[in-house]
Image 1 (cartoon, rainbow, N blue to C red):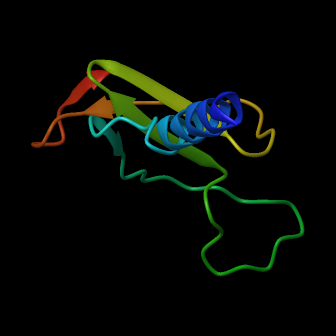
Image 2 (tube, helix red, strand yellow):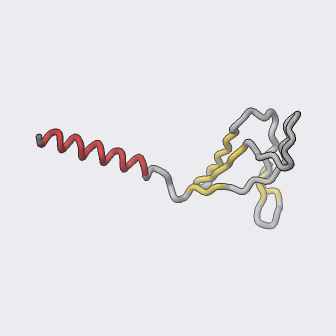
Image 3 (cartoon, rainbow, N blue to C red):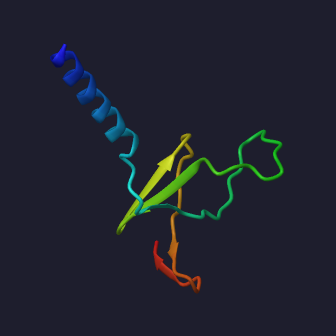
Length: 83
């Protein structure tokens, strides 16, 4: 009985640990750009790209294949920092 209780508590501990695995340092970025699909009729199509950063690392995720993408990183005064 004690071993079952121990295994149950240990399993619950791992489940709770996975729920809070995200980091508070990760921030969603505001993306500005244009994306047009051939045959698309949307007035403002959603960008199939999402980006987050954690510390000094930038993560860019493409939700659909889009071909060539130009990325420019700008500071608060809209000066290009990196292309």
